Image 1 (cartoon, rainbow, N blue to C red):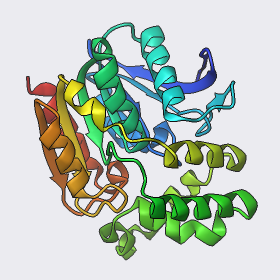
Image 2 (image 1 turned 120 degrees about the vertical axis):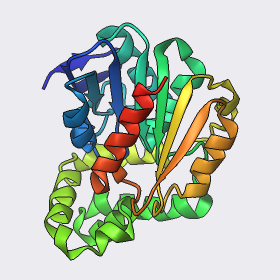
Image 3 (image 1 turned 90 degrees about the horizontal axis):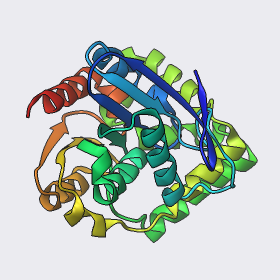
Image 4 (image 1 turned 180 degrees about the vertical axis):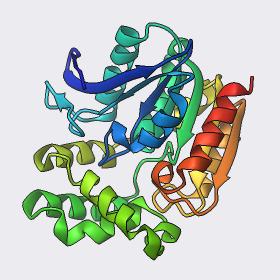
Amino acid sequence: MPIIELKNASCNYILEGEGQETIVFAHGLLWSHWLFHNQIAFLKSKYRILAFDFRGQGKSTSKNGKYDMDSLFDDTVELIETLVGKPVIFAGLSMGGYVGIALGAKRPDLVKKLILMETTTDAETVDSISKYKMLNNMVKTVGYWPVEKSIMAIMFGKKFLEDKSRSNQYDAFLKKLKENNRSLIVKATEGVILRESTEYHLPNIKCKTLILVGSQDVPCPVEKSQHLADNIINSQLIIIDGAGHTGTLEEPEKYNMAIKNFIEND
């Protein structure tokens, strides 16, 4: 997979598929563009797909040592302008959704349609920051193994976690999550947990917007997505029953169809 040298980051990406429209997939914290491998396989016969790793995650790195949301936003804008050069369908999950909200509000010229999955405009609460910092410090000093179950309980819903028939998937997903460079992922995590509220962006998002959320999402529960739907003009909310915070992996077929129907319905 190619690396593009952006102004302040070396960005790993894929650009494949056929079609006039380009869908950009932006992943959530601790993952990489692989988070959308089911959606990419499903959609690439009709659409061009650009999927990338945020700096500090997957195979992307920072050139200036910054991992804050503004830096991720700037990377994303540069990537779209360089590799696509026209408005895209932007699909962001969790952290990728934070970037998508800013993109829809600040660069409407680059967004034809917006898909927000398992995301919010809220800053983390004091309690959440304390919890996530503890997990982050554990990964930094010891490794993933003491906090694996805690991380997976954040990422996935009870339906998936309690389904014994999917234990092989559980192991595969955990292995994929742990591929991140430990010294970099802790920096990327800090950039996310210390983010500020972006509530002020919502009135400025004018493009057609799909909001997807799993009914069992822990860090971004349904009410947060309902708030987005209530405050973004021309938006629709779909709740995916049984999915958690990583619904593209837990319920891929449901996410595939929701995304496809939204894109094709003008």
